[in-house]
Length: 403
Image (tube, rainbow, N blue to C red):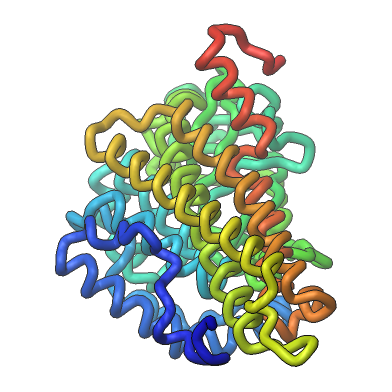
């Protein structure tokens, strides 16, 4: 007979193939430290934050104290960096998404494209969460096609005359961005805009308090409710030439960042499946129907094994992708395959978990409802399932099906 109800400590972890054993001992110790933080500072309160759609800014100093900003920049392995995101997602997808947007997009942008002066001015504070950042790329009318359809414009002028000037010291931004994570409260945002002079895409570090910047929280979300997504409008916002990323001259320059963040979102699919398995297994062991635990029914066991198989297979693919990163060979097609394929496995896994909880699976009193809902956001952002699938299709056929 299966272990007694509630005797979960004697059951194997969802890391069924022990991928954590591939980490160094200091990395395993750091991961254990993160788990303690998540269990004590996040898990007891995440449901309330989600229900109220409130972001817990008060935890940022404690989160910063873990010193996990951009782990690869600190000498950690890519596998460890991915497992950090997976573990955060396992406890609260919203907090993991905040971390990803700030560190894997904004802070990594400073490392990748920032001038020495920009890095000196912002990098330490951003890495330690004394300031927060956002990544303003997506627009109201352009998501998947933002590369070619970007409408936000930048015009270079002389601050003395206010006239267009190719060598001027000021840029004027006009346009709008949508779905910008951290957008309601960030101190700075990396804004992408098309140069009116030559059509090239430029990147700017924009102080969110500048005149002409307006921010509105997106309401009524059914996923990632703790994340503060914003609509942002720029009306004649003046940005100094010193705040332009000089190393960015086209949209191609963004792909390095987007590839890295797409990898981390693929790791979120792993964390989401681990969370679903954790919750469903505990419920199946502890919940009794017809005089015995749910876990003793064959169909429930089959569902749990399918969930576990999906999670372990997803972790295996991501461990392989981490190896490619170590070798500098993680090109966009394998990254896109991971994001698309694992998103589909995640959807199946969380749906099975929600089914195991029955009616309780749609109540936010039970974590599974949040896990199920948040999975829909992961399925869509950092390249939808369809777009990532077509990127892989182009790679394996040599023919593009994307207009």
